[in-house]
Image 1 (cartoon, helix red, strand yellow):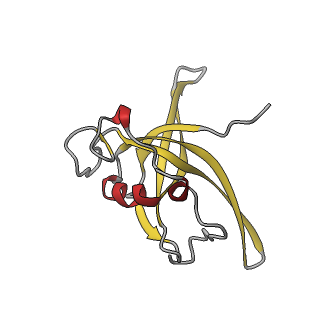
Image 2: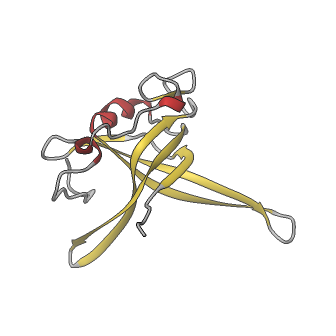
Length: 152
């Protein structure tokens, strides 16, 4: 039997999306997405836990979406988990990220630049196209280093 690596998140952006380019010229946008779970404990007190997710968007979609990915905006993300490792100063580091295949803007939120709910390309959110329209846009080039200390 095969396996499935699928993530669906709805949450609020913790900061504005950041567009950068790989040394090969590939656009990539990163953003932080918060999802919050609330429940009542045994004593009836409301409890809350927030998880932070690093979302990575590649290709033309990264370029076209970045200006709309503003702090506080609610978004829907479909993608897959990807863990990368790197070594710095003799210490091994790990980062698990959501590699976005589809992103839909759900609210103007924060200081949003749109007045209505919409998908990134102006179509109805239910018809939003995948974030990486083509394998080359959704997949980073081989050997791409994601260390945030390296500017690209």
